[in-house]
Image (cartoon, rainbow over all chains, first blue to last red; front, side, top):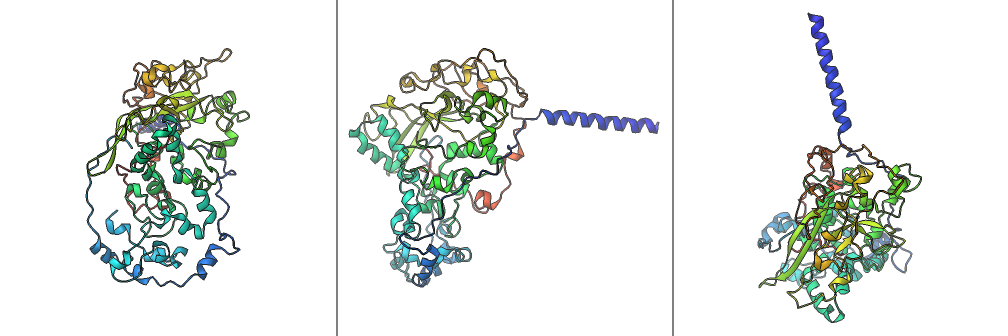
Length: 100
Length: 443
């Protein structure tokens, strides 16, 4: 009796595996194709030299005047102040219809 | 994005940006003083609107090229509208464009610092300059109804683009060179000049003779564009009209749109796009689209097709077309035959209309690939499977009824898990296009 039960379970598992493989093989292939990774779109040549000079943008920035606009940053980095000063948005009803 | 967030500078991240070394007033003008009114007097909120006095100082090559890019010139609109008009109407058309089209104009800041103004603006990452624009908050914020919806798989039962499922963002294909107009200098419209990007850039070995792929071997590289076999139903719009209300707010109305898939003749056929057949979609225009601004502004309406060369962004490896040879050969349902074109547009589209689907050539047997296991056969009478209709002169809005064709429509693979790099900041809400933030593209 015990042997028959075990055989029944094995049979059920076997049927389940067969059924699963059929389902999987019938499913549409939505996978992404293998890409040819050796060919990769490239960006433009680096735009680092300042026009008409041999210095880079980074070097030029380093040569500019020291940062003094602290009042601008004091306010615009202060979330609480910005929240307080922000004007409430006027809700404009969408007039357009259909896909844009 | 809340109003305060739009102008909030993140001190932590911006401090790591080389641009933070530059004084604010160098680009924004105004004054650095405590009094807000005084500080903002003569301030320039979007200094990159004038690239020659801001970005160009350090990025002269890119800004010079960008000045001639389609993102800056919006030349595609003029190309399409001028061809349908006459010089006497150009000024009126340009006035119309200033209300309805120019909001698509993209400056350096619209891609690298802020969300585009057309979707409300606002700093992307606390004023940190992003070398690569984000997909959701920059690119598809404007390119929404067609590119975004198709690429993301927003249309019910139509899966997202295979490249999207492979977690590719816009700039994985559309390079900085292209966006900055370096490889597309002086283009009159988006399909002017060499293809960039092209499928061959990554799939060279899989295309044409020698690919080892039967269908590619047979069709070669000049008979059909890749999209003819590898894209699926996409958006088509018709009868767009623009107006302004009493408060001078511009708006539009698209009276009809539907999902469909159509193969037409390629009127842009040249060395860059040698295909005989391409996918075509109806563009959102009709003869009276701009009648609010004047009568008969498009007297030469038939000079340009209303079914335009198209490259839908919903590429799939297996599609209804790839099932068998007769999915396309002899199947008028998926070709732009005359009965699918409105009578008043037959003249404009004469060169695109396909008299009948090409039959399976002699000597060829129908090959069923077996790569897709449809539960519903493709329609052969212009039915709903293709999302189109051949029994009406003007297709009605329809949706594919190919239930089960794509398998489980709740495919979890189609929606990548949030990831900051991929989405461009998962913590931030995606931009919601306003009525002016539409992507009309240019046909």
